[in-house]
Length: 585
Image (cartoon, helix red, strand yellow):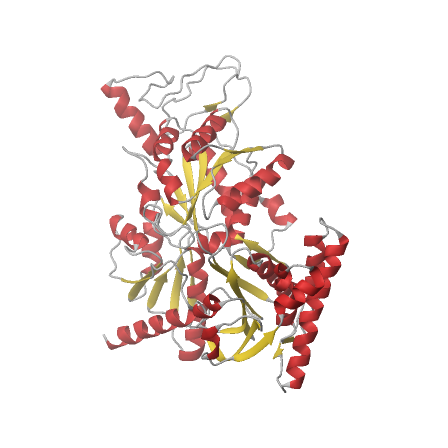
């Protein structure tokens, strides 16, 4: 069982809220969920869609089909043409004149959405509730009580009268559709409800939510940011919640102020973080270098979108990998990680704060719009998990000691004691200029050489890569490297190819991108014949890193850079053709 539900219309017509309510409802019915949101770079107007794929097995990719489509206008049909099939139920307002729909083979359900909404609630805006009821009526056995709960939760802040009117609008759409199916001898779509199918608890969460929760769990006490798509929801989440954890969130005047204030907070001993996307990250470059030079831990989340420049603000891409790896002029090092799902976002964001303080340098968390803004079924963040996570502040001193310490003391591992200002008896200077062990500016060649080498020793023995690989099928000869949410899409395709065609794969998932895990990748691909990188950028940026850091194996690149996630069917065919090509060599 594998269905796709979709709603499409103009921004401002309740598309996003309707999509979230439907997704929550099918999740509560026990299904695995993945979603896809498309919206324009404007506040109101322009087409927006919310797509929900749900199944009794884990799902992550988009499909080139839609089983139920709520279409509010012509553009809704145009943007969905590739997915509309003859069996697709299309719900539309009978008062609208959607020309493209007439020539699109599908099962058409004309419903007076606007009229019902106006008659019941006094506003045509409520047509989304009518349409939601109509769409749920198309699924047999679907429990809709969770929708009612959502309506009560969302509208109770306004008034109980509005709650009841929206519930009535939902019911009207539901009943009209049931009658339509019966009078036209049409069968609803069958769903097999199985609450708690395997006994494991799950969550429905976006990558940005997982990241923000991980930061709070790690003890982040200062967050600064400037609104930018697709990272703004992190700022909004932190502004709303960090106060409950004894912290402060600030919307600064720009991204430069955001990161510099985070560096200042960290110098004062507070765990700090900022979040942005490509254009804002570009503005942070100098401050990242300053944090490295002053050996100040700071966490930066870069939720990638299409670039360069303003690029594609509301589209997904993984084009900032090389920038993040080599950001900063001079010999600058940092740790770069790219989790693959919302649960990993929680876990590795927590660990990012530990690594930042353990090595006293910037840690960059990469994500993208697809992972950051869309919601997925993910592993449950349990109390047991949270209790198992340990805060590691490294060589951190905020108490009086009985010996004199130099803030930038040259040590065997390159990591000095991190002294918080105001600790009695310990004084130091902080500067972005080269400095001696006390922090005072110097241009002495011998000290300069020793300080550079000191900083470079920090990551010389780094071994926290979290790289995983999995064999799908027996004795695989093809290794595939994929990361981020694309890893799960590729995994889904590989399982289907193994089941249908008998093909075998070794699927490799890197998490830490810098320091680059060259040894771990070479060991993983050693006993396979072929290597493929699957990426969402033009250059194949992770593949380029592989060769820059000494990769030896020849490889092929499968990439996509149009701003849209991979379709399951496209990836399936590309990998099938690849296997056939390799088998002929």
